[in-house]
Length: 102
Image (cartoon, rainbow, N blue to C red; front, side, top):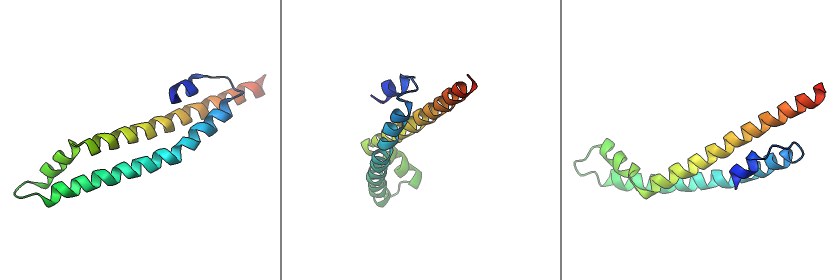
């Protein structure tokens, strides 16, 4: 569980947690790219079947698809992991500074 991993704030394993979360990023990025590709295919299908519809209408129809929902989930996961990494790195710097001041 990514949230549980990030919530533990001891400095001993902080570097390991950052490394572990960082190791998830390539796979998550790959998943985002895969889902983006599936969404693009869906959008292309809607655009090629316009028949009097507007391009905006095709985009709205594509954004109502399961492919788009999955793309949004994958992007949200990627963004969450990036934010957790930022927070953990900030915590690591703060703990390092506190250690050096004592």
